[in-house]
Image (spheres, rainbow, N blue to C red):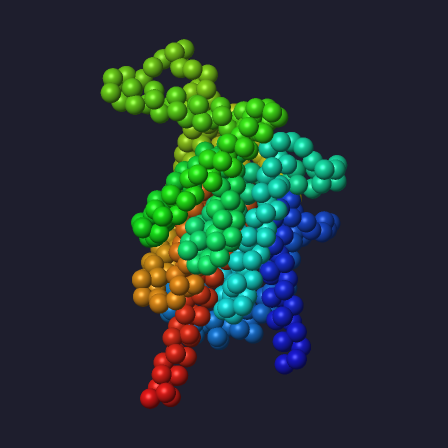
Length: 458
């Protein structure tokens, strides 16, 4: 018992440390690992491996806390994915290991549930989230300005990707908005508004259009849930955002002439022009000739066409096994410019992701796998939304709303980017699910305790 207690506490500490590293540095942290003669062992998979005993020891407790219908569907999905993983390995297809993101990462759900079922750990997670946000904002600034304190820091953080950081900025935005009214001190509220402004500014200037769409989806969702609260926040926020963004825009665009800023500006311009031409085309019912299209719009169209070709190729590939999918470690040959076969299972694999999580699951696991995945996600969303309406705890409401906001942000990003295929972004779908179940369980236990005390008082 003493050993199990120490082991559980060690995993708890390592999990929080792992979250801090991932949220701070994204891919640059996730690719830490050991290169063996057979396969590379990265930090995410290594942590999962050493955490399996924690899940086994707490299996009965977990199975009693989750609803039966959810447990049945997610277990079937997990076993189905593990079967394809095993099938790929016995056929000596090591590429199947890359698809562990679709099944093995589900283990982050029970791990997060076990650790976050403690209210103290839940609050530590929020502290880690905002502390790491300060670091990933700084990392983003280095990447935008292309200025680094040292060559060592450059070699490390240059390995991360903006869409990794974009997800983390979205997570921070969701929780900052939801916990703003929970903060009592004016100083903390002011700092929250400044931090919120920095995150939104970064989401805009990194020039990833998917992040813009995800941010809009998040704001719309929070507007419908928070209503008057978010309107009051907006009035206080807008002046600080204009001040912060004006200063940063001046430093980035006017003084430094940042390449990233020019790219973001170009993408915004191309998107505006594209929408303008699309509107005129709809009205005139006539598509302009290629020669009449501005260069920015041509670039925008090329990007859309590339994605459409990838999606079409993946769907066509998956339709050959409509029900069960094509399995893990098997990839379609895309008819796109510069296509080449996958090179390996390491960091520079050369694998072209579908940039759409639903299509990716469909062609690998068929309608069966996709249906199971959709059910699990839809169930969690409405399960959390239903409890949000009946909870009397302000903290629980703030955390659930923030988690649902992240849920919306993650899925919106995953529709257009390789979010589910990348470890530093894929894991947060399951971690957020685990956190949602944990915070609901905490609320239920709290209500039981209050009921007991009331009965004793009578």
